[in-house]
Length: 215
Image 1 (cartoon, one colour):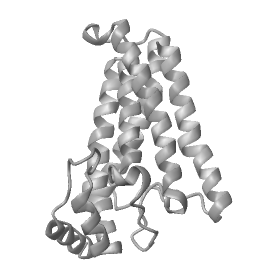
Image 2 (cartoon, one colour):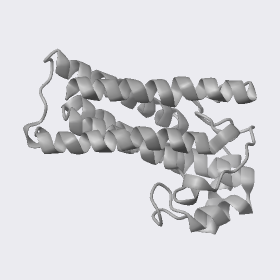
Image 3 (cartoon, one colour):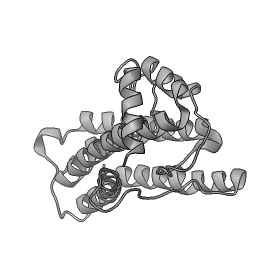
């Protein structure tokens, strides 16, 4: 399964970052990449670092499996789990691209606190506030099931922690500050990563925005 996992990973990476950035640049003159935010050691910085570590681990896990440098965990090493992984990873790749395209010109990688983009609330964003991240996590979960070694599992855990930090402590305060009542109303109605789960209390969202302004 390592070859399949590596192929899916490379297709996902090329389409989700390379191809999507090309499309963004052609449409807007800007690739949409904002990179790391925050000073070294800050929450924003750690969120970005964990994301990078997860991306590297996602590539390293199948490569290490192919060269027999690391063994899969026996508990997860069976055909049915690997098949489930293929389904999850493939669905995640397609879902990631669909959600990225649904963002249109507002698509970004990273946050620029001084930038204001349109708040997207329809399509997949009417189901979950962060469908791109949800689908990325599904892709990573699938790849981990296909190549269930310690590097893949560690990368998956790092991704989940990084996404939680990025969304809860960076993006949600930024969006609340940028879009005010429109975002707090939206966040109170739509779940964070899955339908109905992680909806924000409007007053909490406003408090997060105020904390962001005082940093």
